[in-house]
Each structure stands twice: as structure tokens, then as C-alpha cells.
Image 1 (cartoon, rainbow, N blue to C red):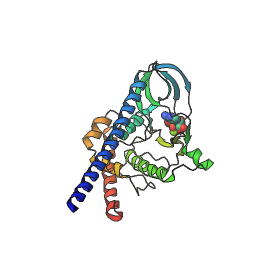
Image 2 (tube, rainbow, N blue to C red; image 1 turned 90 degrees about the vertical axis):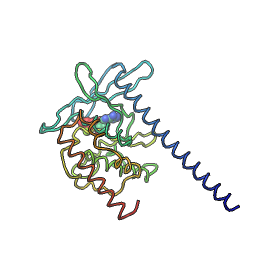
Image 3 (tube, protein in one colour; image 1 turned 120 degrees about the horizontal axis):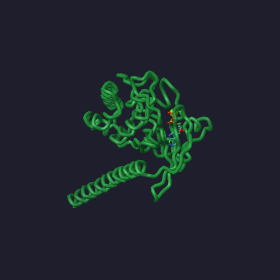
Image 4 (cartoon, rainbow, N blue to C red; image 1 turned 45 degrees about the horizontal axis):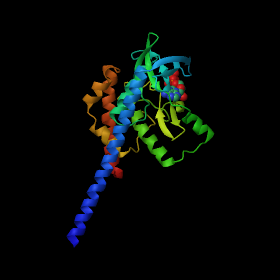
Length: 263
Ligand SMILES: Nc1ncnc2c1ncn2[C@@H]1O[C@H](COP(=O)(O)OP(=O)(O)O)[C@@H](O)[C@H]1O
Ligand SMILES: [Mg+2]
């Protein structure tokens, strides 16, 4: 009798874990399909019209249409990559998206390189009706699920240390580059055009204190050669080697945190 009960518990636990695992991998697969679809759309949709957008650089909001759906894209043109003294390049935004995909993070909206009217830039899917984090703070709007919101910001902080691109802590206050989709409070991070500074250190004042299990595991699994393969078109040798150095530092930091606080 006891054996039968144990067996039933084992089978139940196995089925439960299997179903959970399946639903998780289906969710990841769905996200990947969505990103691929958006990338194809951004590459192929017809440019219907364009108008100037805000920001420091030359940015445009583009009306796109592929015959099935009309959407907006955010087109960034400035391309002053390092060693330019005033660094600001759309290429770093694409590099950040590639890294986000390698980590299965889904914090950077889909973006591709595209030529529009003879000029190359990055074309990113436009997050409609977004609320900027800076405005959320000014207006004192509470997210519906503050814990989830805070946890996402912790993961974003890890990613910002990795890409060396602070938005809400550290050396600079750039709250305007963190935006939320008002429908579901999904957090998106845009504007990595000054990212990937060749710094061997993490960002002062943006200390990592927490990281989701998923991001930690993905970071530890991610091989340097996979990063090199995907980002080598966008980063120079120094930017790349410092990125890999920061990845190592972050993993060491996480291991220390786990040893101190437990998983
Ligand atoms: N994909 C996007 N979807 C919605 N809004 C965006 C998107 N990209 C940028 N923005 C908005 O436009 C502003 C300026 O764009 P940004 O990329 O920061 O330009 P710059 O590099 O010139 O500062 C951002 O702060 C953000 O509010
Ligand atoms: Mg900006």
C-alpha cells in the first residue's frame, strides 16, 4: 500500500514537472517566433511615410505596412561608434538586442539594421502608448504588481551592467529610456546607443544584489564564443573583450551572492 502511494507521488511529481517544463519551453519558443516574425516584418515592410521623433540623435518614426498589418518603427541613424570621442551609434542598440536574445531576456524590443532612403540605421518596433519610467516616477504611478516590477528591474540592472549602459542608477540618470507598455506593464529598455563602453569594471553605483534564476542560469550557460559570433559585427575587439570580462565579473558576483544568501 505504502509502495503504491509512493509510486503515485513519484508519477504525479514527474508529470507535474514535465508539464511545467513543457509550458516553459513552449513560452520560450513562442517568444522566439514572435521576435523572428517582428524582425522579418521590420526588414520587409513597406515604408509608407516618416516623421521626425524626439531624442538627441537623428530619429524618425516610420509608418510601416506589409500588406497585412500597419505598424510603427523607430529609426535611429546616428552612427558614431568608438573610437569616436562622443559615442552614439545605432549599432550598439542592435548588439544589445542580440545579447538580450542570447540570454532569452526579452527586455529589448526587436530591432534590425535597415537602409531607408539610402541611409543605414536601426529600425526598432515602436512600443505604442508607452509610459516612460521618468514620467511614472514624477506622476507617482504604482505598477499593478510591484514585486514583479522590482524583480524585472533587478534583471535589467544585471543586463545594464553587462552592456555598460545605466538607465536608472549609477553615474547618470537616464530614466527616460525605460518604458512600459501600459496594457500589461511589460518593461522595455530602449536606447543603447552609448552602451558597451570598454570598461573592465561593473557600473559604479549599480550594484547587483539579485538576479532571477532564469537569467543567472542563462548567463552561466552562455559561452563566450556564442557572444562573439552574434556581436562581432557591432563591437570592436576592445568592446568585446571588456564585455566578456564583465560577464565573468557578474557570474563571480552572483556565485558570491548565492553562497552568502542562498539561491
Ligand atoms: N522602440 C521605441 N518605442 C517607443 N518609444 C521609443 C522607442 N525608442 C525610443 N523611444 C522613445 O523615444 C525617445 C528618444 O529615443 P532614444 O533612442 O532615446 O534617442 P536618443 O539616442 O536620441 O536619445 C526615448 O526616450 C523613448 O521615449
Ligand atoms: Mg535616449
